[in-house]
Length: 89
Image (cartoon, rainbow, N blue to C red; front, top):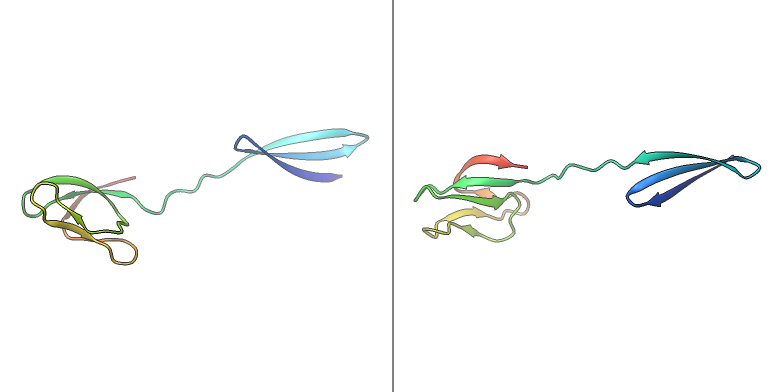
């Protein structure tokens, strides 16, 4: 018996050759990993404007209304200066 794995349209198919040209198939669905980062809904401490930002931003994020700094990059997760209202996943 020989075991083969075939990838077809986002599904792995396990195919076993049982002898004399006969084949038995089995479907194994791939596991989709959960993202490790989220979006955050942040309230500005100066003007109370609510804004959605990325948790791992690579640039300084400023409020669109009053230009106050909401988040600064820190080599991984951002340093959030405003109030985090909700974590959006």
